[in-house]
Length: 367
Image (cartoon, rainbow, N blue to C red; front, side):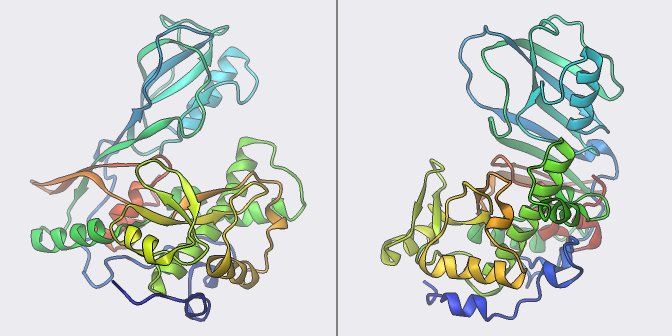
C-alpha cells in the first residue's frame, strides 16, 4: 500500500490544472492521465457516427401499464435534446414534459429510452417523423423517466487509423483496470468551444436558479469544471486510488455513501476497488466532506474565488473520483481497433478513449 497522502500535500501540490489555462474555459490538456507513462495510440474517433455506438442498459421495470409511454429510439447525428424539443413542439407540450434517462451525443448511433405522457400518443403511435430518429418499440409505464434511471451504458467504439501496437494497448488497459479511470466530465459537457462553464458562472453570479434546459446545462458545466479540477488535484498528488479522512466514499456495488473515519479499514477497501472517494458537485443539498477531505475542497474553492453559497441555486451531488471498466473487450480491425465496454450512468466514454489515444482527437470535440 502507498504511504498515506495528506491534505497539505494536495493543497500544496502546485498543480497547473484546467482552471489555470483560461478562466472557466475547458482545457483538456490540464486533466492528467492515469496512464501518463505509456504513449497513446492516436487514431481518429467518430470518423463516422457508426464508429461510436452507445446503448442504454435499462433498469428492471414492473409490468406494463400506466400514464406514460416509454419509447426506445435509435438516433443518428442528432442530440437527445433535439429530439425532446422537436417532439414537444410537435405535440405543443410544455418544455420538460418528456423524460429521458440520459443525454446522448450527436455524432453517434445511440439507442435510448424516452418517456411521453400518454395524453399525446400511444405505444402504436403516431410518432413525429424526424431525420435520424427511428422508433424501435414502446409500451405503457407508470412514471416519467428521469436522468439516471438506467443501470449504465454499453459502448462499441471503432478507433480508426490508430497505431496497431497491441502490447501498448494492453498496457494502457491494464493500468486503467488496475487503478480505475479518472472520472472527468468530457468535453461534451462544456460545449463546442468549451465555454459553457463561463456562461454558468455568469448565470450563478446573479444568484438566481437556472430556468431553461440550456441555463441548467451551463450551470452544471461550472459544477463539472470544478469537479474536474478536484479530480486533477487528487490524481497529481497521489491521492487517486486511496481515501482520506473525511472523504465521502462510495461503495461500488451498491452506490451507498459514507464518511471515511477509519483509514486502516477504508484504505484497504479503496485499494481493492470496493470503494472510491467522491468529489463535490457543489450545491445546496450535496453531501459535505469532513476533516482532511473538506480542507482540500475548501482550498479548491478558495483558489477559484468561489464559495459553497455561490452554488446554492443548484441542488448539488457527489460524483465518484474514478470509474471502473466493466465487460471490456477489444479486437484489431482492418483499419484500427474496436473496443466494447460498459460504464455506469453519467460516466463518459471519452474519459476512457483519451487515455488510449493521448492526442487532440482523443478529446472528442466532434460531439
